[in-house]
Image (cartoon, rainbow, N blue to C red):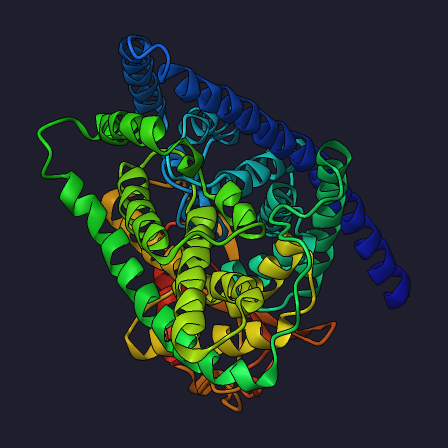
Length: 507
């Protein structure tokens, strides 16, 4: 009887995941297609300006109108600002509430304009938020409860990333490692289903070629692995520097004598000379990484590209425009890898054919350092490049970069962005009951503790725990074990406070 019930439950969530995957796959694929079409038009326009420079005056007017329009969109709904990933994480922690339809169309339009006109922003963050918005809309349509809504939001986020990058496994790992920080069988099942379905929709439109295909990749010989240790440390230090500067940008923008919703005027105007002189650098940077597969530029050019992309990606994201940092981070990592590879060729006698390996390895290491999600970074880069020749060096560099950032006090960038968002935007939520899910890890003080001996926060009630695939009712002398998931009943207005309190206990 229990097995039949479990099978019915899994079948139900498979159907939900399929529905979310279809909806998210269509929306995100259209979003991606619109950005590609607009980016192509913008590239041709900048090329034409060299023969007709007077048209730059008209383009200046277009950029001003675009910046003002996106600013008004963001003012009407502040939840479309930035990548959207912190907002999704806030929803899953019951710390934020959003209007899914408003986010859906405003993020779509604002993201297409911001990324399509060449700002150094990525499509993946908005894609994750768009997928979550589709899932939230489905949840409201079927009147899903709080727990099911969170499962749907997770599957929508997974589907969004899968469709944006043709990376379904990375979409699942992102939800497990970055968003939830734990493994839930139903979340896994629904999210993976939605990611596979969304990826199929995306592949049907864009084809089977990997997003960052770089041609044939040779396996890196073992005698070069010493260089990976140096690269990992370098990426960790640079990743921590990226975190610090990105989180400072909002404070620096506040010094400008213009309303916050119009900060976008700065990057929309500064991108014009960049597009005029260096049109191939525009956008998130995927075309730059693909170009490295054909030829690596000279070292001086690489240093210039890194400086340009680092500074302007900060300016672009700091203005709180609808756009992500996944692709900008990956492109910066690729440039760091190319610089390190060329230096290794010049000073350590490395063969030039292995520079591409360092481009790929550094992408994963830089993302692992900044996002503190090494498994997601490894699988994401593997799926985007379409090669399995680099898994071992990817793992080495991602691990070292992660540890270096940890030693330097860095936190996952999206957690930091969410904390800043909650400070800037106090949210008034309508009171309703919610159930928090809290995982117990191997190094947690909760492991082996009796329920009655744990200093539980106020305004919450531990109702049950999941152990394996069994849900157990608890009493005072129930012993909590590693691998358990605690189910904690509270009010959504206090959910964030309760969750953080239990986090402190668990440390």
